[in-house]
Structures are given as structure tokens and as C-alpha cells.
Amino acid sequence: MTDNLLQALDSLAEPATLIVGDAILDRYIWGNAERVSQEAPVILLRADRDEVRLGGAANVANMVRGLGARATLATVVGCDMQGAELSRELEAVGVDTSLVIPVAHRPTTVKERFIGRAQNRHPHQMLRVDREVREPLSTEQEDLLLDLLLPRLESFQSVLISDYGKGVCTPRVIRSVIEAGQRLGIPVVVDPRPGQDYSLYVGATAVTPNRLETRLATGIDVKTTEQAFAAGRQLCETLQLDHAYVTLDADGIALVHSQGQPQLLPTRRRQVYDITGAGDMVLATIGVGLASGLPPATVGRLANVAGGLEVERVGVVPITRAEMRADLLAHSHASIGKIVTVDELAVALEGRRRQGQTVVFTNGCFDLLHAGHVSYLQQAATEGDCLVVAVNSDRSVRGLNKGPERPIFPEQQRAALLAALAAVDFVVIFDEDTPHALLERLRPEVLVKGGTYARHEIVGWEIVEGYGGRVCPLGVVPGLSTTNIVGRLRETGASRVAPFLNDFPERKAG
Image (cartoon, rainbow, N blue to C red):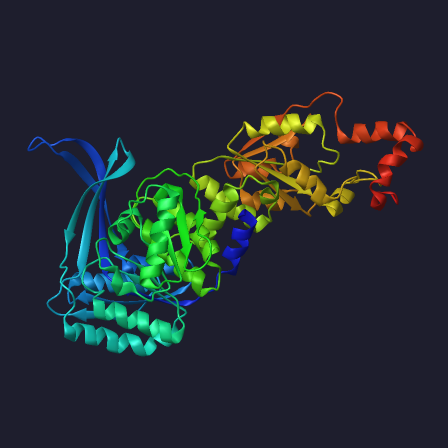
């Protein structure tokens, strides 16, 4: 499954995506929650940092850009400083703002969040203050938006409607966009607002409601998978959808098709710091995935990964393809998922370090894997959180003058045996005579080596210690080494070794 998702991630295109909806400017005030105020029974926040982020439909556009796609936002903002600031923030991340329309007598929606840290750590949201109006756009404002938007619709590969209930997504705007998308064959995906009359979304390609939104729309209290499937079927039938993605927070996504069997797309349990923006991230991923021609189920699984990463962050933060790849690699337990290229490994280790993990690195030929190898790799794993084993390629082994019969096993088989060990997180094959280039690229926190080496005898020690890493010689199991084992096999005589060699005809010539 991981390999399929990695391939799907690599196949994501850079589609032109239109986001229609309510743009919000998010402000964050960070500080330490030090004590209770003497003036009132409230927490005193000593602010030390202010931050501005994109919210609502603007956040969806930002997340589409984070996924490597092109994004154009169609919305209405006020003729005020906040509207100008929102446009500048959009342009800074590469979002096309040609359809962001300033209008008079309508303020830009602003949400201000106060984030407190307890004892300088563990940040949590303490309070949110909203400045907004929720009245629908006037007919004149609708005309202005649609007259600019509809003629350009055919230039997009997908349309995302982000309805936050702030007045931009009027019935006329929604119906006009969906009907135009149907005529042009462009997928239109809607993230609805709670309590909305969902009949406005008839004919959309898909909707992405959460449990609450689904219950309000269908009357079905979504507590089980079967209830999610039933609600999704109802949505598909009444709204004439191709499919519905019912998001189930920690349980993943229930994908229901207008035709065919529903599917539960489970997700990995995560440490939830802030659910803000998770729905936007799911919507963005689904939009980019469908525009890239991926199957709905694959798109939903990628959305699970992206949404899961989002809840591990505080506030709305775009999730990139590289972060999704790192997460997939970091949590793959299948052996095939452990054997990676250098580029894949670099991204995976970035994800591990983001989780506070310490990377341990070791290298060797690992020909004829034996108990000595297993013992030292298990010991190496205790030196950190993530053990990387770099394996000499067949060419590299021959260059080390191990003897004409070495390596006995080809590099892919040696890598597969190592990947099967629980202590090993990643295996990478390298072709150089030394691991110097790998160490400079990956910069592990700990370099280990089994055997009778002193610290300064371990190849690459100067590189690791040069950037502040640690070099750790490990022990050896007496009498166990590949060279000794091969020597004993040679001493037993050709007649006893011949059956073994017959299994590996490519090695006979040595």
C-alpha cells in the first residue's frame, strides 16, 4: 500500500486549480501563559510573537500551492488594510489573485487566535476573536465575481468550493460554478458548511463533509462505518454526486461511490495538536488528486496522510509532497518499504527528525548475514530512534578486495535480509568505496560500527564529529565474521560446498 501511495504521490501533476469561497485572514498571537491575572480570573498571556496566515478558501489555495499545483482564488474581500494584506500573503506564496475582488462596504473576514505555551512548551489555543459579516453578496457583487470567473473556468483542471458561510458562496454563485463545471467536464469538489441546504450542491463531483456536517445534511448520526456509508449513499443519491468523502477524523475517510461498493479508507492514529485547517488540507489534496487523474480511493488515502500531518501542526500550515513522502516512508513497516534510494531516505529522515527522532547510521557489506550482524544491529538501534543501514553494492564489495567469491549474495538480496530485521528502519545501497558521500548528505546524529574498531578507525568519523555528531564503536561476537565463515566453508572442501553454490550459479565463476 505504501509503495502504491508513493507512486501516486509521484504521479501528481501541477493542475490549474480554481478555489471559490470565503477568504479569511488568520492572525496568531503567541506567548507564554504565565499565571492568573490579578485583575480577573483569566490567564495572563505574555505575547512574544505575532503571525499572519491564510484562512478559509485562501488557506485551501495556499495548500494547493503547497502540493505543487497552480492555484487561483476567486473571492471577495473588503477595501481595507486586511484585504490588501490578505492579497499580499496570497501573492507571496504564488496564488493567482486576479479573481480576488475588493468591494466597498464589506470588511475582510479576520480571525485572531491567542496561542499560549505552558512553561515555554506545549502550545495550545486559548481564545479566538472573529471580525466578520455573514450577509450574502449583493446581486451587483455576484455579477462582478461571476462575470470575471465563468469565462476563465475552462482553463482549470479542477474547481474547489470552500464554503465557510461568510457570504461569498451564495446559491447563485454555487449553482453557476457547478453547472459550468458539468458542461466543461471539470471536477467540482465542495467542502460544505454545517447546516447549509445541500441541495445547492446538486451535480457536484464530490463533497467532503465531516461527521457533524453529514448528520446535519442527512439526519444520520455518523458513529459507525455502516452509518457513514448509509449517509454517503444518501448524499450521492440526493445530490447526484459521483462520490462522497465523509471524513471521520481518527477513523479516516468513508468513500461512497454513486455506483459500486463503499470503502473505508483508514488512517494512522496521530498526536493531535490542532484540528484547524485539516478539512482544508483534505479538500486541497482531493482536488489536486482528481485533477491529476488518480482514482478516488487513492486520492482519499493521500488526503488521509495530508490531513493527518495537518493536525500534528499548530495552526494552518501547508503540507508539501515531500512531507507526505517522508511520512509514508517513516511509517512503512513492510520490508519493501524500508529499501529506499538516497533521495527517498533524505526526505524520510527529515520527517523523522521533525518528530524529534535521532538517526543512527551504520554501513557494511552484510554478506552472509549472521548472528554477529544481528546482535550489533540490535545494539545499534538502541543508540537512537531510527537505524539506517547502508549496504555496499556488488561493485563496491568487489572493490574492497574481499576475495573473488564475494559478494556471495547480490545486493538486493542482502538489502532484503537486512530490511526484514525489526531493528532496521531503512536500507540504502551505495556504490562508492566509502560512505563519505552518504554521511555528508544524510548527516546522521550517530555513526556506529560493529567490530574491533577504535573511534578514529571508523570510516567517516571525522565527517560526523565535524558537524557535531557522535561516533560509537560497538562490540563483536567472538568468532563470527563473514570472512571467517567463508574461510571455514572453503576448508570443508568443494564437494560439500558445491550444493550451496548450485543455488547461486552466477557466483561459480569466482
